[in-house]
Image (cartoon, rainbow, N blue to C red; front, side):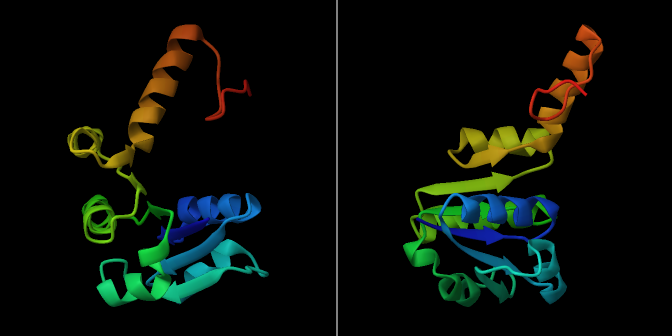
Length: 143
């Protein structure tokens, strides 16, 4: 299985490492070469310096043969456009896009783009913790 990760910050690099640990071939794309350090000193996967909106960079990453694309840059608009390109132009079946704005996440989810909205997840967890009176991590464990 092959995954392309666009954006190598805390989230993208963590997803890349998890997929690599699960046995996937992983290619990470980021416009900042220093982001490679987020993957650790012995990253065995590929890292491409370039912008995820650049079609040539996407082709170089191997998007045409990708089983999944995860888009997690620091910009909602950028993530949405890259996700739509991966989904519609390159016909990648599993495209997952991080969108911080809950309204945009709902809008694009309604248009069949698989969105993850950390803001909505945090709102739900914080509300639940306030109502229940317990602290919980993102994985449901009490802290």
